[in-house]
Amino acid sequence: MSKRIAKKQLDFMLAQQFKCPKCKSSGAHVERVAMAGTGISRFMEIQTYTYAFVSCLNCGFTESYNLKMLEGRDDLGQVLDMLFMN
Image 1 (cartoon, rainbow, N blue to C red):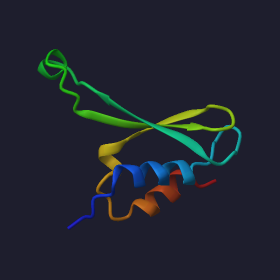
Image 2 (image 1 turned 180 degrees about the vertical axis):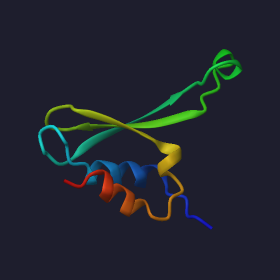
Image 3 (image 1 turned 180 degrees about the horizontal axis):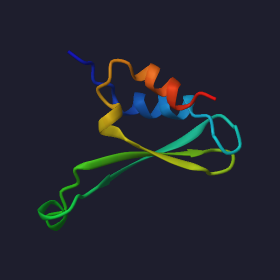
């Protein structure tokens, strides 16, 4: 059974562990965005896709992450370490 991680905790972890690949600065701002798909979900404005946009506090470089892939992971710390390693 996998643990679901709280939204605020995930956002905090993304911001704290982010290392900008462009300027090598640490720290980021996280914004969540929900988007509709195609077909009937778009017509009815059902937002089934959620992403986190992580922006460097120094230069503004931004990366996006699919939250369905990150939320609910038991090994989230290891995943984030792999994403932000140099």
